[in-house]
Length: 305
Image (cartoon, rainbow, N blue to C red):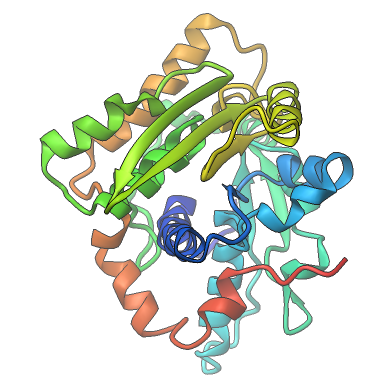
């Protein structure tokens, strides 16, 4: 279909875990702007800005994996002027709101748009069908390096609770199977619209809420405003059940499809040899190379009123 290199957005999800877990610890230490809300979902971010602007300061400054990846790839291209090809970044996303996200002013680095185009999974499916490509008969290929390797933590970003579980793995920082299993049993998994859990980090109890679906998010924010509930970390996804049921995904999505996508995400994690984002060797290489000294510029948003 005309692409020179194909990478995995889950690589950038690993980057997001690194930055978001660090931001959470900083906010917990300072006690500022808590709870920390996740920023991966552009539908949620826009909803918060329009309907609950007083919570804008609580949203993480981390860019979404898509936007981190675009900035990273463009910066990597700038560092290799000998390669005279033009760099065009096209994302394949389960989300229609991602099309709007790439046009936001904070997602231009040095005046250059980080991600050039977004295709939904539904659109790519149609393109494949129109081209007469039979995926079942296509030979398997590996993703390109160095941005084609991701951890299991990055893979589960697409299901409600996945971001929280990935961040908790990084904070607990253990790859022992019993520790990973303990995190998965904390109440972060499942397709309910609202999940709550508490985790002990150091000498502090951290209260967490995981919400999917904007009606559920609206209800929760109103309860927070009323002082009925208090949290330290809140994961929000605009679509019920998370990105697996995103607005750009093939429809209809019945019970079997939902269950299949949900299980598929965790199967990728189960089969991954790397469970923690900080154990991805290419993440370490990126921090020591392309983004060294430019983490805030490339990986974080700089909002204006």
